[in-house]
Amino acid sequence: MTTLNFNDTKTAFAHKSNNSLIRDYQIFRLINQSWLVKFGTNTASKLMNLGIKTPIAIGMRPTIYATFCGGDTLEDATKKINNLYEFGVQAILDYGVEGKEEEEDFNRTENAIKQAILFAKNYDAVGIVCSKFTGLIPFSILEKMHANEPLSSEENFILEKSKKRIYGIAQLAFDNDVSLFVDAEESWIQQPLDDLTFDLMATFNKQKPIIYNTVQLYRKDRLEFFKTTAEKAKNAGFIYAAKLVRGAYMEKEEVRARKLNYENPIQTSKENTDKDYNLALKFAIENIEHIAICVATHNEESTLLATQLMQTNQLKSNHPHIHFSQLYGMSDNITFNLAKSGYNSSKYMPYGPVKDVIPYLIRRAQENTSVSGQMGRELKLLKDEVRRRKLFVL
Ligand SMILES: Cc1cc2nc3c(=O)[nH]c(=O)nc-3n(C[C@H](O)[C@H](O)[C@H](O)COP(=O)(O)OP(=O)(O)OC[C@H]3O[C@@H](n4cnc5c(N)ncnc54)[C@H](O)[C@@H]3O)c2cc1C
Image 1 (cartoon, rainbow, N blue to C red):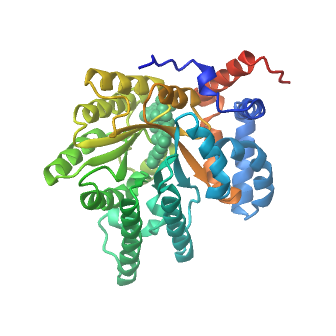
Image 2 (tube, rainbow, N blue to C red):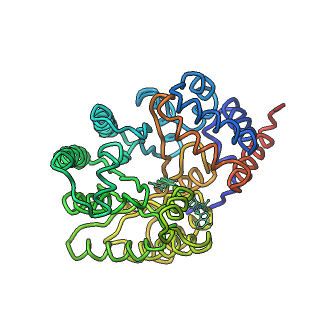
Image 3 (tube, protein in one colour):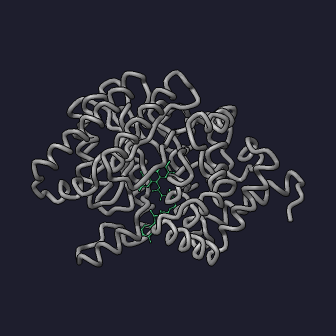
């Protein structure tokens, strides 16, 4: 086993040509400017609200879309997928369209996920397809279910239809031996998502992990939830599979809790989030016979900890119940160095028309400005590699 070195930029960026390295370096230099990101994202959001998407899409396509997305369609993404796989990194396909509420949109999302599953079938470069249940069930219904409010007969009808849709997707994933990730979303709709996913696991995870829920350790209650749900699954005789994340909706959670005057479900400090994330890793790896995890993080300490825990527990680096994943366009130093050392390593790759992935791209720009700290690291790594290759950049 090779020793992990997350500063090895030669391995991290070996998949990038000089041109794409320079493009990404320039992009990260731009989005490091917080004033520019603030101005750009405010303008983009305003134009989006007015239904004006074309100029934003034109600006984003050769820039942050190229850096963070696979392409408009699965076929367009193939080149990037194959490029990752040449270096032992798999792709997790994420149909990036968000925030849709109409029946027609739900059908479109269902078809796109099914198409991705069939695309992944027998294609070693893709082992997992990801889904957001808010793309398949109306948010308002999930909100009511979470709050234990009664549904009208029309809502019940829509819910049954949505459940059928989701079961159809899960069945297709199972039949074709492709794993399906279910993303975690806002805490005020999470209970029905957890319940639904648990039922799917009970049906499809008897032999191996096919359906994965997502556990957000930035929530105060999730470590306990993770442990008790894993125990329930073990007693019921199936594998509890979970993507472990810190969580992406911190600001939204805080704003809603303050507005509606309830206790903010988010941890009171980053240290507490980190502590619970690492404890969840430890619990999972010590019980890996009954649990499967995706270590979905850009945090180097947590990633290293996971690899150390694997060694302590004498697990092979390519143990089928442990995967590592980072977003496409971020933390290549983690992904590619893990892959080089033989770990199951993948990139979360969103794809879809530029106009539809604008909200995703706005989030990537925001989290990569200089305030978050992450950007500094990303930019430094790109800069180191530009220097190592002796490239000239203005
Ligand atoms: C493959 C993949 C899949 C993902 N899927 C999902 C998903 O389904 N649902 C979802 O919500 N997110 C998802 N995420 C995003 C993830 O939740 C994190 O927001 C993101 O990865 C940043 O956290 P980090 O672990 O990489 O590391 P870090 O950069 O170390 O941590 C940053 C995170 O710490 C937490 N944090 C920061 N400050 C504080 C504070 N003051 N108090 C408490 N907590 C704090 C926040 O969650 C913040 O995002 C996914 C990420 C990856 C890589």
